[in-house]
Length: 206
Image 1 (spheres, rainbow, N blue to C red):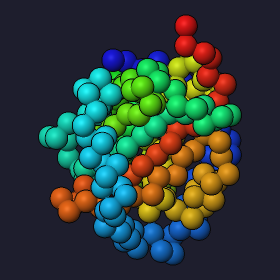
Image 2 (image 1 turned 45 degrees about the horizontal axis):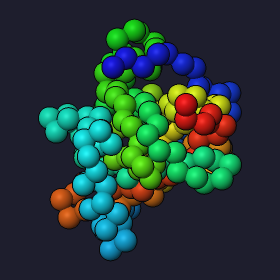
Image 3 (image 1 turned 60 degrees about the horizontal axis):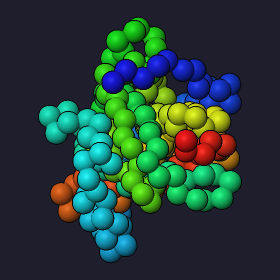
Image 4 (image 1 turned 120 degrees about the vertical axis):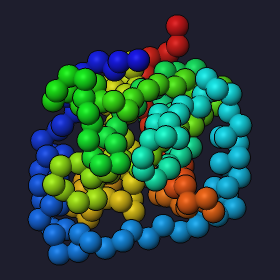
């Protein structure tokens, strides 16, 4: 499925990326620390892995180069925390080398790695992919783009706390369109994170 192009590069994001690039130059080679999977997340992983196919998205196939990453997601109303059941969510990302490999040059939303999923009765969904690479020249700015059709705004982004630089982390912690995901590592080496997507002003289902 092709996701329509959209512009979400808010000036604040651009400024944060630029500032972070300079701030992180002194320690850009450090290796992120990711703790082992704990019991609570392991239990959540079992539930999400058992979701029916319609609620489980393999965004990047097993043959895609890169470290495997699984997001255990839940879509809710930002205003109330109410789960949003049977809602459509779209994703796209760069590959492990940081390339979007767009169908339309310069339009990131036409990235090669893209897909969609529908939430279950409890607003749950699971996404299996690879960790995206750093985008451009900025270190540790790994992210996955999210679109929630009908929400206002529709655009959100997953950032990964252990794979985001200090400047961008500070911006993301204060943004209502950025979701910082804490990652743990499974015995297989796969990265696992639990994430709530708080969508704003979503209309009632027809």
